Image (cartoon, rainbow, N blue to C red; front, side, top):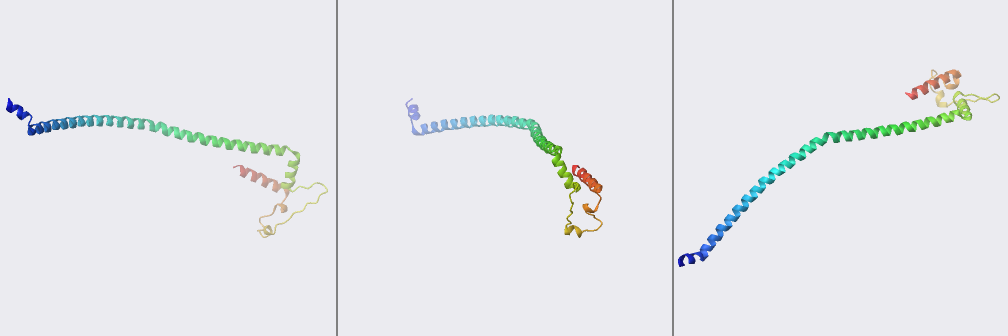
Length: 158
């Protein structure tokens, strides 16, 4: 027994025993790490699969949502433009209901003069150079000017 005890306490035996214990610990930690790594890899794969499924499942509804929001914004913009146009037309209607404005526009557009007034037509020098086929408003009868005004108004609405 004395040899065995001496052998047990010898430096070489202790180093050998320490090396075996360290090797066993390293082996155990490597297997634990590998087990953890494989377990995390499975979890990560499942997490990635779930995230991809959620992304695919939500992609179409999100696209529809964004599309509908842009349609709503466009419709609201068109509504605001229509409201502005209605206000402009109401203002114009109110102006035309004023007799003074109507007289002013009739005199201006149809070249009317009141009894006792003298009407003057100023000829633009550039207009005189134009072709004779294109007669000026003063050279034509008044009803031709009226019809031209109706045609221009109709063309503006299209």
